[in-house]
Amino acid sequence: MARFAYDRDSENERKNQMLMSEERKIPARSPELAPLKRAAEDGDAEAQVDYAKYLHQQFDDPAEAFRWLERAAAQQHPEGLYILSLFYLNGWNGVQSPGVGFKLMEASAETGFPAAQLDLGLMYIKGTGTAPDLPKAAQWIAKAAAAGLPVAEYEMGLLHLNGEGVERDFLTALGWFKKAADQHHPDGLFYIGAAVYEGLGTDKNPAHGWEIIQEALRMGSTVARNNIQNYPEPAAAP
Image (cartoon, rainbow, N blue to C red; front, side, top):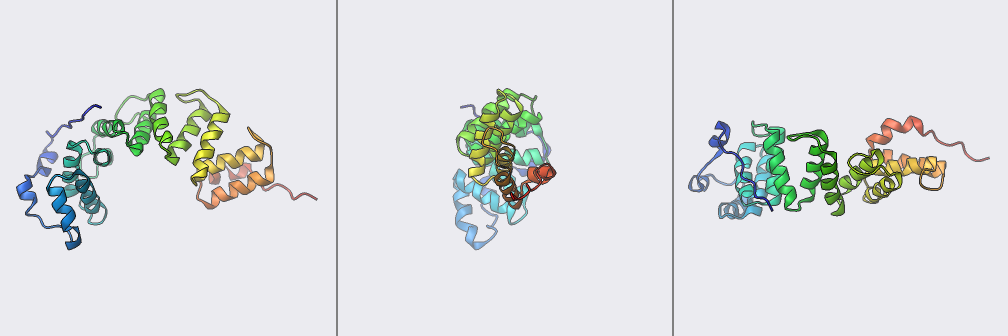
């Protein structure tokens, strides 16, 4: 597995570096978090990530969160690498660098972290921080899908539906959509409903397909909402 060492030369990153002796002088954000901060100070990478998430999400302090994520990432912690990548991709700490974000995401994906494998695949599709590469995108998304991540299963369905980086195969796409729908993915459920409505790869049953599409709408499917005009309610049988 490749180890990723990120560039610390920027002025903003230098400002965020702090000796642990100085870090220990900073009190925890709440008494309840004091044990977690002590564990993070003692080098527990899992604690460093958990404490960083509290700092960012509950206390709106991306700068302090960034410092702890850097420490966790230096220990090759999968989620630490992943979240630090998101910091660089979104500029949450004032530094936006798609290239660094890509390298961190790749390092996290190589540890087997499914969320990073999915996002790395999406980065290859969009060309974020790297050149677009659909075959590589499909390879990484497939790893996340194999781990049971419903969004990745849905994305594999789209790749096979459109023949992007993989062979175009509607039945294979439908199989992936079903896996995603079985885990309550709204857009995956829409594609199942549409297939049943039209009789594509399965027995045609417009009434049942319409019901499935309505359920996808109730679940918040954007794809269903954008395509509902193509699937009117079938007339009731006489």
